[in-house]
Amino acid sequence: MKPRRLLALLAIPALLLAGCAGQEAERAPLTKGVDEAAKAALPQDIRDAGVLNVAVDYPYPPFASDDENGNPMGLDIDLAYALGEKLDIKVNINKQPFDTAVASLQANSNDIILSGMNDTLERQKTLDFIEYLHAGFAIAVPAGNPKGISEVFDLCGLTIASQKASTTGDILVGISEECKAAGKPEVKMHELATVPDSNTALQAGNVDGFIGDAPIMAFLAETSGDGKAVELLEFPELPKGFAPVFTGIGVLKSDEGLSEAILLAMKSIEEEGTYDELLKRSGLEQYRVERIDMNLAES
Image 1 (tube, rainbow, N blue to C red):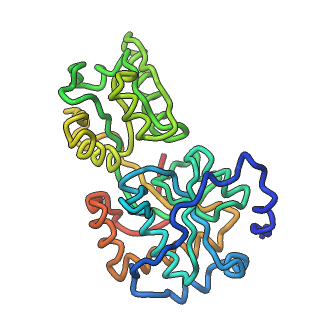
Image 2 (image 1 turned 90 degrees about the vertical axis):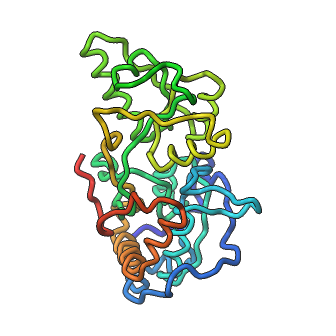
């Protein structure tokens, strides 16, 4: 196994962390305590370092954001600290742009990614995913739906924003291909760094809509402009939204021991009921996975 802590000190500046959010301030316990099997599975180099570094994209509510006091909150934040309790190790929440999260693991700056990352077969070439959500995608437009979008083909020719390096871009490519096959203009994609950037672009009139994970989009629809700025599209042919995918904790495939430790810790969190409590706390209970498992993506 690579000496991750030494390499982390030598990582090139382009892969340095974007900053840290709340280096484990005083927090009330979330779980029922240490899981000895998970703790025993944790690689020795992480145990020796005494810290689990977690890459988290900010802001990404309800997964990760700051409360009114500047402290990190959200499902991914809670899960990170719950994992620390199960593994009996300190947790550092490190702000990391989404499109460099994998690179931060490869540079040994972080150990795991907990950032609402969708599990795909392409990503599984590099990462193992311990699944904790199953949700589809949604498209937001200005309140009142001024373009009158009622079916997928109504998106043809429009400018739709998506987060850079996310699977939402692949969905837009697929829609665009359908448009071209039907003799209609393709969807104009506009990639931005974060979902809030897309929301800002929409409200500024720079895009006609933006696509994102359903949990994120529902939160934005409820909170943007006191719930009056944007609305989510509903397509009769897609009653459950765009194809649901699994969201998981990302671990490098070369770190098999760490993947096993995270999987055991998550199963313990599920079995004691904390998993359901944390989902409810973030309003995400409808996206619960049937079981905590690893690498469930099929496409």
